[in-house]
Image (cartoon, rainbow, N blue to C red; front, side, top):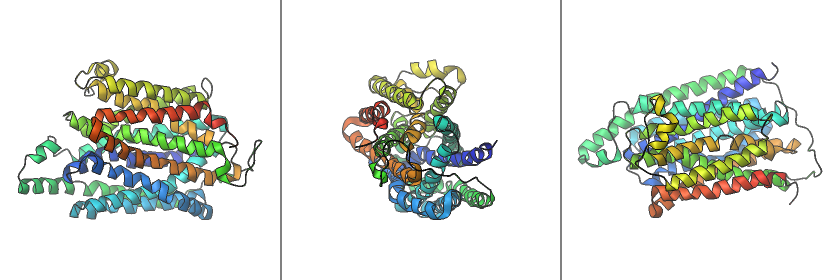
Length: 425
């Protein structure tokens, strides 16, 4: 019971992380249409969102040093609310630059929330079960990721069921301007509503009481004067860089990939990836730590990622055999085999984040908050690698560019096998 209320409160934050983050999966193809963008330009939306984690991680850790974890969460929620309100002038003016600014501000708010909440969950209970606690948070996070694209499709795109980049291109200049204005206007009410919700939650978090966590002195054979001298942390941040990159590529490009294949449900395809992640989190929660260690989960996840990526690269863009086998009974719309394997990467990715955090923060003691900020900076992979994917897609095609994922999973696998054990350079 001592950890139930704190986990319930932090669980709400993780739901917010997922909802706001995975709205991007529907937002990117939407803005690609109304702003007439190519793949590289569209992925700047993800870049501005995730680059905030690099630019703001250390400043936000300094904020946490002064405010404490709880008040830092309040600041983060308020900042997200401000970013969501910026979507109003962006939608009214159609200026892509304002959309990008709004994404950066929202990402900055999420940075302080992530910097505060992840070490809090690690330290609130036994170290051995930290991955399981993070898995519970992950279920909430990815469940929100399932809902968010469906929410966006329902509130924003319901009145435009047959609109695509191809159909917009066929309109005259005046008809296109009218259609774009109507689509942009639909984005304002839900984003204002979400902003109000963030401000209300900020007030609620200011009033709630959370137990303080006490950091102990660093343990183990090596005690260093600088956080950067802990190899398990630095290598963990590198592994997170590649993990977040492959996760964002899977979740945020599946809509564009489906749109290229002519799928009508392209805006909701991110939900398929998130649903697969929820299944992976539930399985991890059951297996860790009784039957599967945190490092075993990490290594196994990397192996699955390599397998699914390889199958994606050689699979059909027309056959729906895999989707028929996996969820044909459920009534969920079927997708081509290549899209199904892309969605299954969500299952492979599920336990990577929960496993890396406790392994990377092990033995840091008083450096935990600063170490958390270093790990948060690894989220920059979500900014950089999708742009690399977009550039590769220009030459190799959307499907061939997914070969980039193989590099990411190899590095994640190395950290799970060897990198997390290092305690000196």
